[in-house]
Amino acid sequence: MQTHLSKRDQKHIWHPLTQHKLHPEMLGISSAKGAIITDESGREYIDAISSWYTCVYGHCNPAILKAVTAQMQVLDQVVFSGFTHEPAVALSEALIAILPDNQEKLFFSDNGSTATEIGIKMALQYHFNRGERRNVLIAFEEGFHGDTFGAMSVSGLSVYNGPFEELSLQVKRIPVPTKENIHELESLLGRLLQEHAVAGFIYEPLVQGAAGMKTHDADGLNILLKMMKANNVVTIADEVMTGFGKTGTYFASDHLTEKPDIICLSKALTAGLMPMAVTSCTTEVFEAFYSDSIEKGFFHGHTYTANPLACTAALAGIDLLKSPAMQANIQRIMRSHKSFDQELSKNPMVMNTRQIGVIYAFELAVTMERYGDLRDRLFRQFMERGVFLRPLGNILYLLPPYIISDEQLQRVYNSIIEVLEEYQQ
Image (tube, rainbow, N blue to C red; front, side, top):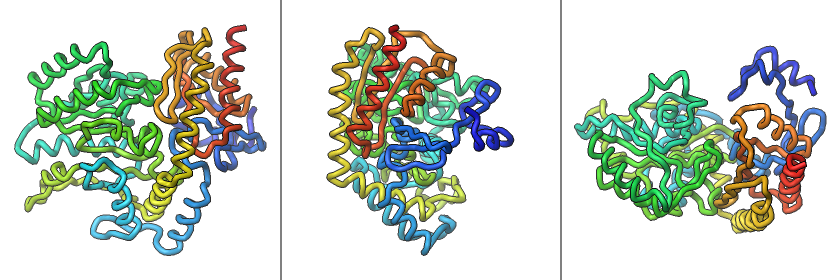
């Protein structure tokens, strides 16, 4: 259906992750509230993926809107080089209070790709400032860390990287740890650490988002992190997707005994209201840049670094995350997913179901392209049922807002069962 907004959109706008010759029309969205997004014709859809994992407290959350509205009457924007302000300082205190205990310093930026880009640059310059030339990075196969050049270099999904692979940083890829491969993986990592000057290891802790919410073993990841630390490799946890409650704890790194040196945050950081990112690090990392020599400083900056409105949104979001009501919601969704899995996993069309926290994913027992016709058909079938899901090839995943009602969640589950029944017929 071509709408007024869709026609106007086509004239000038270039959308992300879109081949416009194949998909020229975009659905016009006019409003959003709670777990519901509404198109310009008035049709409602349950946002079952929190709009790319951002609006976890619901769209237009009144507590966040109230805080940001008050802040914009006082201070909207100011340069963050040479100045500071209350929202940024208060957010630093609130974040450090919930981050893993070894995190002490925060560097603000604008988006998830940049958060990981900064983490990579910190790791490389950390060794440079200490007089070592280490220029190799280690990353997981099928990892995804963003679209800027450093982030893209360490990402292992060629559908995004193809034209640029020859221009990338030096990266060695390893499989994610499992109980079956951990001994072989230890040997492989040992050889890589011996043969290459490894600066950093970047990883999505416990669940790889763009790979299809693929999960891996916490014990195995702890072993790898311990080996990295023993070889003075800077460890970088990309928690852009996993952060702020999605795995059942504040951060996925909370499930691990080995804590990262650097953590990358964005998406749900500001509850989906405004763009912002944070890269946190240990005191040891920061001190490698702390010098009488200006050249050893970290010269990276953005115009909207630590924007006061974004910081205020993040502060309000953290208050919500820590509240007993929101924590109860997270546990409620986790229980619901577990119950749904007991039914869904028996379906012959379904394989490899998996859950961590509010994230639930499974694979259809069919082969399809990541952005092919069959995948597009699935997307349309869910939208026809008033549910916004975004399949990754044959992988379907749920990551609903924490405030989703039981009735709305059941509608999402029912839509999945109905679509599977159509395929079985």
